[in-house]
Image 1 (cartoon, rainbow, N blue to C red):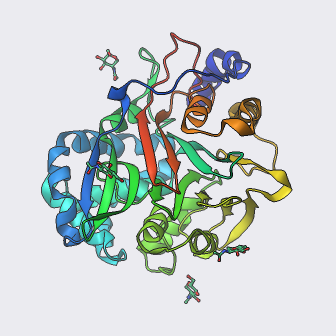
Image 2: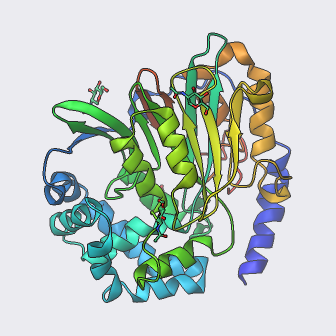
Length: 388
Ligand SMILES: *[C@@H]1O[C@H](CO)[C@@H](O)[C@H](O)[C@H]1NC(C)=O
Ligand SMILES: *[C@@H]1O[C@H](CO)[C@@H](O)[C@H](O)[C@H]1NC(C)=O
Ligand SMILES: *[C@@H]1O[C@H](CO)[C@@H](O)[C@H](O)[C@H]1NC(C)=O
Ligand SMILES: *[C@@H]1O[C@H](CO)[C@@H](O)[C@H](O)[C@H]1NC(C)=O
């Protein structure tokens, strides 16, 4: 049934949309109402208190999303039902095994939202198993570095045959926010996230670096690491989005960040995309759980930009999901003299980089710490959107 449905999707949507690669101009700036709201999280407050006001403010949206996750996780893979079955037994206790401050932050979110702790933990480890994205790092002619990303999430979770949307994707939208993390009254770093999700998927530490994560599609990669963690077989590994938050909190340089993200043992494989403040400071780190399989650097072989989706960048991209080739073509078409917030936003708003799973686009400039994150919604009325 599922196979039949997937085949239908491919025939009806993908094939017509494959040839419809765009390279738009004039999309920037988007309407101001699409800018995501920014909130402050004070790192000087005890971890259990940091998120309480926000978790309480967003509790309806959080409950709605998590109820959906619990019901439909099994649709992605029957094995994930196993995780849901642990929500009341194993997952609450897991909070106490997570490194500080993450367990306490999850407890605070649970208290303030009224959601059981096991459900908050489920939501926070879910990224280890599913999402798609596009990230770009570009260097302009003067050597300034810019970093853009689309976050694509929730595909294969309940295609709405009437609205042509993914149900999970739609439930994530109301939770999209920007966070200023402050310490001693200063902004230490900024992220774009889903409220209640405390790891970092997209972030910038002003004057130091910016970072994004893209899922690496390797069968069952995330699942094994999670099991090893839960059953205390191996806890000497980081959760992939906590590793980013650890660097945003503690790292003092671009080099330190790249080295750490290339080496730290991980619960799941992924791609880390890091940008710095000086010419040549950009890297795509292709991670396995144990180490890096490849590090591609800006500046090497005259590369003035780096682009990454969810497949190893040195391999042929799968025909059913090649967002990399159109992205590279569009960047080349824009050219070196157009690496700006505007051009990166235009590229990331072009189909198929922009598709039915895309929920936000963030653009960052690590040297200044500027970040702009916009709500995105691909509508077929303007041009056909690919489902992913
Ligand atoms: C977040 O930080 C930026 C400066 O980095 C500032 O301009 C903005 O007003 C802050 N937002 C809030 C809600 O404090
Ligand atoms: C589909 O869109 C309509 C109108 O925007 C909305 O009322 C309805 O809830 C949507 N369906 C789902 C499943 O999101
Ligand atoms: C960062 O690392 C690169 C390559 O390993 C090296 O050339 C550069 O000098 C380092 N920069 C700093 C500030 O340590
Ligand atoms: C744990 O990981 C660190 C690297 O982060 C490594 O240096 C250390 O040897 C590992 N310890 C064990 C027991 O595997």
